[in-house]
Image (tube, rainbow, N blue to C red; front, side):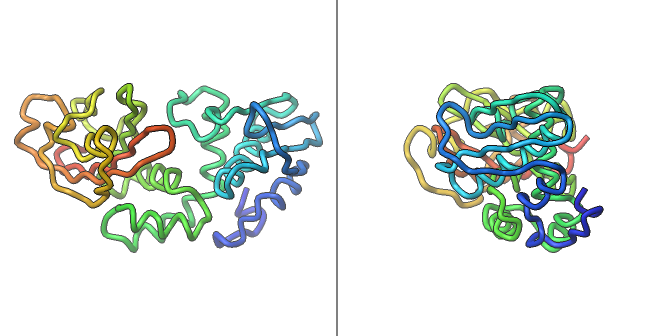
Length: 244
């Protein structure tokens, strides 16, 4: 879509203009009970986004609704906060389809990959620089970088109830499956349960994160950050033998 519109740089990704070109008008209003919605027929639609949300959230919501317009035209859809940008949805879920479309629209691979080629490793700092370039959230940027298959990184998100989601699935050998509960050795545990603010990269034994036999003979790098809603997102850099 972006190539067809002649868009070649991140600063040119004007989502309201893209929506208009596709027959949808974007409006911003205070919304209760949902983050965004789209109402339309086969030719025209109105996208309404919660004006109370932050800039990055509003931007992803617009792209998400354009995704619905592309995939699910003709439906009346109301998207709650948990529907947008939720990696826990399976691949066939309409909200996941809209999320994937939004990710490709805001962080298109043909623009992202050249920037990724310039960095040696993914950290919060390097990902933040790229997120700023695309006016995207740090979480969305990290997920897209992980899916590029250029870096041996796994993103793992835990909440107070345990493992919420991890990405990318299917790239690493099946025994490299993150533990459901955080080990007390991990920096993520310290951040989630003890209020630590140590967001630096640290070397750590793999058996703190993985339960397979022999995990104690491998070392990984962990860097964790706090997300809203008592969640911790960890960037795990894995050894070459983890890649399938």
